Each structure stands twice: as structure tokens, then as C-alpha cells.
Length: 258
Image (cartoon, rainbow, N blue to C red; front, side):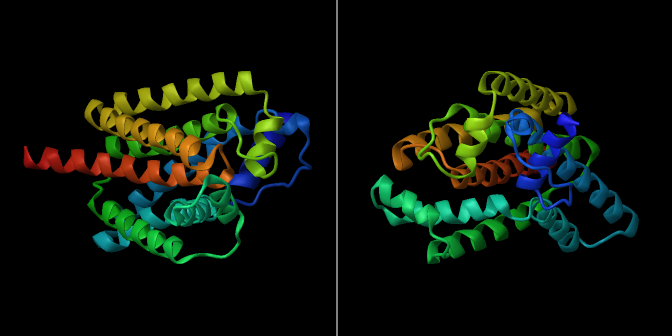
């Protein structure tokens, strides 16, 4: 029951999938971050299913791309896009870290948040249109959704918190950090190995993209905000998904040229 409750806590927080709502406590939140990558598995399976439907019904490229673009947002309920928007506003403000933290807490959506969201969705839709859903590419994309959630969970378990409140702090303080770090690191390695096994070129390019975004994320958390928050974790996840897909599409395009 504790395992099921732990998974339910992760899905209730990080997805829009209807699940039973257990009362959060120390026992079922201890390893909730370890269940976070399972949402990536669901998104990967949804991409596989949508690709199959598109292949059978011969949908046009734009409709196929729209499905790939919308599925992650629909499954997560946009929770990470919310963090992306808030962080975009804060970064564009060019104010001290304390003021940036206040902007993250502001419920209003600023102009830069709207601009960056539009840019993000347009860019991601375009990449989805360029994505060729072969079996090996779909497996790499699915593993990528898992990898990015492993890295996001690792950051919550490893990075210093900016404040002693908020959901990121709640999950970090409740976690058995030592075991969570080991489990998420092992899952991250498994996801990378899966990508490399599916296609060495795709896997290497996507791994490098994810690690580059993670390095920039770690630096931004420390220098710009003085610590981690849930919004920043969402900002990282969205950017990592974008650039991993960009790396995959670029590799596919390069193969065509060769």
C-alpha cells in the first residue's frame, strides 16, 4: 500500500491523471520523487500510441505534430509550464535574487512569461513537425521524458532550497535524500543506456543536450536565485525536453542529408 500511495502522491502532484488522493505523510512522501519518472513513462507511451494512430489514419504532418506537442502538456496539466512562465518573468526582470523570488510567487502572468510561452510552444510544435516517429526515435524520445524527470528530481534532492516553504521544499524535506539520489541516478543511467541502445547517435546527442541544460540550470539556481524552488525545477524540465527533442530532430535531419 505504501508503494501505491507513493506513486499516487507523485502522480497527483506532477500530472493531471486522475488517481486516488492519499493523505500526504512522511511514509508515502519519503520516496515520492523516485516515482516522478513514471510520469515520463506515461508520456512516452502516449507518444507511441499517437504515432500508431497517425500511421494507421495517415494524419497530416501538422495534426501529428500538434498531438505530440499537446500530449505532455495534457498529461502534466501544465504544471511545469507554469514554472517555466514564472521563471521567465523573474529572469527578465534583472533584479536581485530576493526580488526574483518574489516574482516567482506572484500569481500574475507578466508580459515576458506570455512571450516566452508563445515562443516555446511555437518552437516545440515546429520540432514535433520535424520529428520522424520511427521505432528507435520514439524509444529515445520516451526515455528522454524519463531522463529529464530523473534529473529534475535529483535537483530537488541535491540543490539547496531558496526558502523553507513551497512544494519543492516539502518534497525535499520529506525525502530520504540519500536513497532518493541513488535511485534517481540509477534510473537516469538506465534511461541514457536505453537511448544509446536504441540509437547511439540519437542517444548521445540527447544526453549531451540534457546535461548541458542541467549545467546551466545549476548555475542559474545558484547565481540568479540563491537556491531552488519548484518553479525553477519546472523551468529546467521544459527547457530540457525542448533541447533534447531539438537534438533528436537535428540528428534525424543530418541522417537525411547523408
